[in-house]
Image (cartoon, rainbow, N blue to C red; front, side, top):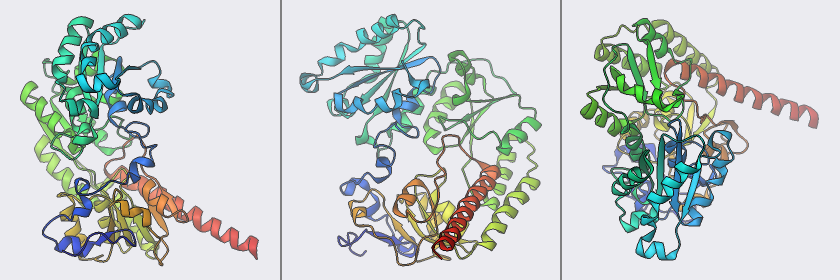
Amino acid sequence: MRNEMRMEKASFYTVRELAESDRIPDLYQVTKHLVFSSPATLAYNSPGAEGYGVKRAGLSIPQSVMLIVSPGCCGRNTSQISSMPRYRDRFFYLQMDETDLITGRHLKKIPGAVAEIVDFLKDKPKLVMICATCADALLGTDWERVCRKAEEESGVKVRPCYMYALTREGLRPPMVHVRQSLYSLLEERGKDKTAVNLLGFFSPVSEDWELFRYLKSALVQSIRQLSTCESYDEFLRMAEANFNIVLNQECRPAADDLAARLKIPYIELQRFYEPDRIHRQYGAFSKAADIVVEDEEDYHQARKALDTFTAANRDLHVSIGECVNADPFELALTLASRGLSVDEIFAPVNVLSRWYLKKLSLISPDTRVFCSQSPSMLLYEEPEKEIDLAIGKDAAYYHPRAAHVFWNSDVQPFGYAAVRALVREIAQAVGSTMKSAVEEITVQA
């Protein structure tokens, strides 16, 4: 293994080097070096200012409020979220001082603070989420015990969520725990054979996802998502599901809990942009769910859209970031296998990436893979061969002159519909950039 840190420029490995390596290099393991928070900085460097961090995720259930227990510096950046209409009057704060940090005396104040919030609000909440920060991670606070005491004093459900950056690389990172915490509220109910849940995201899946049609054709009448529940009681009806469909691997532990506790089995679907992979997955889903899935027309439409665009744009040089509604390596493999030049990927490498890296090494071995959280990214310089298309806000930041497709909206694209939508956005971005360039040359002439 070669020296990983090239301090004269941004560090990277090629796809070939990563595919041939017997381990994940330290460069991509943030516990092995200092962290340059590039992706988070582009989202206001807040766990909840953009996208769904712990704070926004913790308030996904209707009729809930949040008590943030933290030093002033950790709670201050929540003001960005509080300005959004849907979060107004839903955040409350219990500030910790230096004595609290040393003695933990703030823990005795929490049950009374929760009761005060409930008494203060005209519309009584059904749930109070307590958001804890790294200070209590270091103190080793038993939040389950604290929440039980708060429930006794307030008379409402109280659950914890952890904004613990210290556990981000552990077995139970914050975004995994918050999902478990939310779904732990579901209680035993009679099963409805015509009801299905979509688990994984805190925002809705795009309405044009073809799976909705497939399920309706199979006489599924209720397809529930946490994000579309309009009341706490409606959320509780998710316990009636015949089975769950997991769309994000961070929700797998929560689905395991529901399977063990409420006897709701689950099927997991991954997000792909290669139509062939989507088609094979629907075949497996059809067998597992015992549902007839007729996806041939959707499959051919998605494949035709992707093939037509890539065949006409094989001279494009592409950079892909991690701030996208996609697996960057799967997307890179999809585009590179159709002849586009994927020059760069900005994304962490993990065990799940290895399969894509092996395949990608056969067709694009020299693709550079950067770790956006490496301090060496401060020294990044654009390559001599100019990037034409940057997919992801982070890739766009590094390539300001390229055509930009952020592809990171809250509404989640999935399936064949996602393939067609991405192709449309890329075509529009590349087309508008080319038109602007022609107009600029004409004006200069």
